Length: 363
Ligand code: ADP
Ligand code: ZN
Image (cartoon, rainbow, N blue to C red; front, side):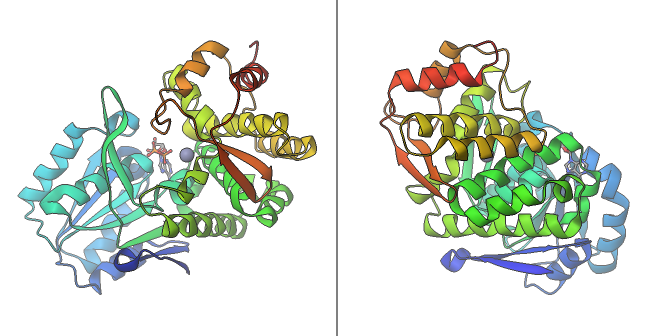
C-alpha cells in the first residue's frame, strides 16, 4: 500500500493507494479511537458488486455497522437523502466519535461527507472512492456538498476525512466512460504542474486504457500528490488552488448549456482544456505544438475534443454564471508550458468567442 500525506495542520490525513483495501478500511477503524458505530454509505451499483464482500469483511471487525444504499446518479446528491442519512445515524445511535464511511464515486462521497460534516457538528469521515474521478479529484481537498434544485453543489462545507483508501481493483468494474471522465482531470495535473507526468501519460496510453494496475496506481498517486500539494497551500481556495480550475471555466459553461445531460464532468473538462490552451496560444502564452500535443493526448484517450449542440453566444453567457466568476471577471487559467500555468482576467471577448467557435462543432 502506498501512502500520501495531505498536510493540513491538525486536519492532516493519509491517502492509501493499493489493491483490495476493504479489509484495510475495517482494520483502520478497528485500531482507531473511534467509537465502534459505523455508518457505511454506498450506492446501488456499488452495493450490487461489492456489498457481499464488504459485509463479510466488516462482520469480522465491527459488529456494529449499518449500510445505507442510495440510488446512483447525481440527482441523489440532495438534502432529502442527507435527511435520510441523518435519520439513520440517529436511529443507529451514532455518537460524536462514530465514523461515516463513503464507498462510491463523487456522489456518495460528497453526500456522505456533507452528512459527516454536519451531523452532531461533525463526526469522523473515511472515504473509499471507487471512480477514477473521485480517486484523483473529489477525495482530495475536503469539499463536500449537496445540490439545490437551483444549482449544483450550492450547499456544502469544507470537511477533511480522517483517511482515504483508494482501491484500484474497484476500477475493474467501472464503465469505460467513467474511466475516461477521470482521465480528464489526470491530464489537467500534467498541464498545471508536472511536464514529466504529462510525458508519462503520453507514453502509457495503452496501459492506462487497458487497466494496467501498476500504471493506474502510478498515475493516481501522482495526481493525488499534485492535488494534495496545491490544497495544502490553500485549503479554502483563495489563491493557488485556482490553478486546479484549468479547463473548468469553459467546462462548467458546456455542462450547463447541455443541461448536464450530454457530457459528464471529465469530458467537459477535456473540451475546456483545449479551449483554454487555444486561448493561451492566441495570446502568445504557449506554442501551437504544445496545444496540439494536449489535443492529441485527449484524443488518444478517446475523449471528445469538440462539443456539439451548443452555440457560441450561449456558452459565452454561461461563462459569467460560473460560481468562480466574481464581479463579472473571469479568472482564466492559461497554459504557458506543460507544468506551468498563469491566471489572468484579461482575455478579450473577441479571443474567447473565436476560441469557442473552434471548439464547438458547427459553431
Ligand atoms: P463521479 O462523480 O465520481 O463521476 P458517481 O458517483 O456519479 O461518480 O458514479 C458514477 C457511476 O459509476 C454511478 O452510476 C456509480 O454507481 C458507478 N460506479 C461507481 N464506482 C463504480 C465501480 N467501481 N464499479 C462500477 N460502477 C461504479
Ligand atoms: Zn473537475
